[in-house]
Figure 1 (cartoon, rainbow, N blue to C red):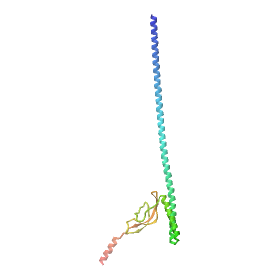
Figure 2 (tube, rainbow, N blue to C red):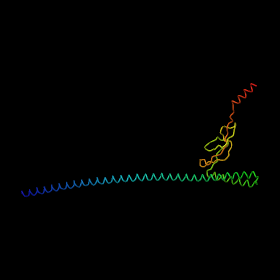
Figure 3 (cartoon, rainbow, N blue to C red):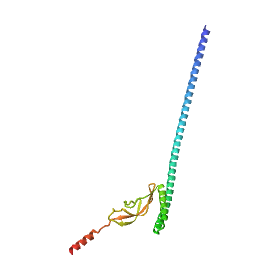
Figure 4 (cartoon, rainbow, N blue to C red):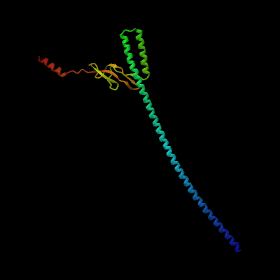
Length: 208
């Protein structure tokens, strides 16, 4: 009987030891799992941080490229406008010469058909300039504007306001709302009367 009791106690002790070993093993596995999970979280954090940094770098690169593209577009557009303005100025110089040729033909009493032909060509020339955005600057009887007019002479006029354009010496033109060539003009000046001398003459006349 005692042997049977001892065997039962031995079995219980063995079972208890096995359970403790299992618990210890589970605890070790749990600790290892936690450490592994913590390591994975740290790796994910570093990967996310690296990804965010790379994304920010990419955004900066895209922004820099966009700014560079806009800058180049502006430079190209500015160069095109500059070249166009130079070309239009050459056309205007040719037009000036052509206008003088038409005037000479009229003064020399060239045949009417010749003059009309020349004037027809001049109209086509003006149409071409207008189609390219070249517009004449208003001058005669308009207030003098230093932004679009160059005054090279003046005339005394009492019938006009001070600094009114009285004559156009050379036509001026605008291109795309910018001055392509300023107008050369004559402007009015008021006649300043010497009231002191007039008064002295009047007084002398009274004394006499």
